[in-house]
Image (cartoon, rainbow, N blue to C red; front, side, top):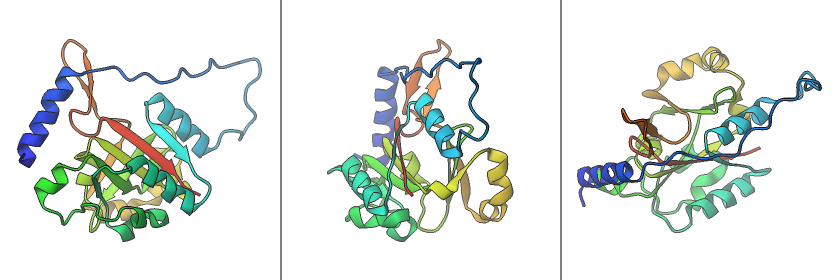
Length: 209
């Protein structure tokens, strides 16, 4: 199947299987006992927002645990990933044989799961920021049906403004800056929500130390 045919087939299938993502409900705020100042961290806020977006997430204590988690998530499925030296925590070593941005286009389009790092995770919105460049193809986060994103805990920012301020030079030097907020979703005029039409229908975040 050609890359074009594979993409069109996925679009047709997504239109037939539209669904509304269901995540756990957030607890009601208790105004009588407000949280102590400083009790919420950027990471804890990020995890709350990811839950609300229907994004599976894992927090791992060591680089080896991050690699083990990614290996378990990938299993035997064909992978499209960033180059190994661009992935944090040495994750590239558990992705032997993965397709990369240098692989034939048809091969990239046929991969089932994409593995990337990211340059920031925005706590206030649960967004992942991916800067494309050499060894970091944008296709890895857009083409496969499942996107696994590895996040360094030091790259979690409280707000988008903080990220823009601290990483302005990195943004300016990137080929493309992509903000990913949960699975790809769209709704037609009848308000039927469909996941995975314009990108991955499932996003998994693995946060390392």
